[in-house]
Amino acid sequence: MSVGNEVRTPGSDATAGELVTRLSEQVSRLVRDELALARAEMSRKGKKAALGGGMLGGAGVAAVFGVGVLLAAAVLGLATAVSAWLAALIVGAVLVAIAGVLALTGKKEVSQATPPLPVDAIEGVKDDLHTVKEARQR
Image 1 (cartoon, rainbow, N blue to C red):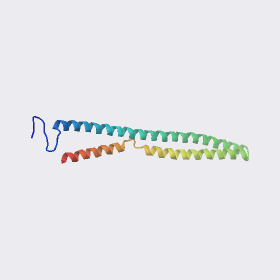
Image 2: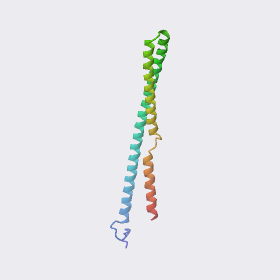
Image 3: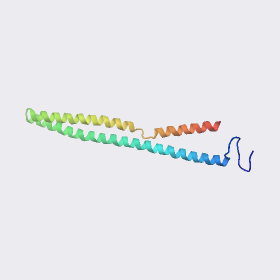
Image 4: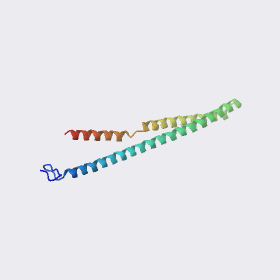
């Protein structure tokens, strides 16, 4: 059934060399696709981390302004008796509330981006290896 170095199996028109070439091309394509998946996943997670970090930075800025206004409210409250410090106290409380919302939202965004591993791509490679091992055992 063999002619020279070519091995043919019943019902197959491909030589062993052609099968090896096809296997090599498929493995190369699989590796390229898995790397592309890993890059895309890392890019998504990086964007989430950047967004969360920006929100945490915004929370810090809002908190600094809130503390400044609250300090001004305390000073005005001691200096005068009613309207000026009450207005400053309301503004300060609003800024601190904004800082709280930004901090919680930023924390959520950062936690969704961690761990910074391409988990989906790693699982895909594990599945591919498992499939290859099963096929090899048959």
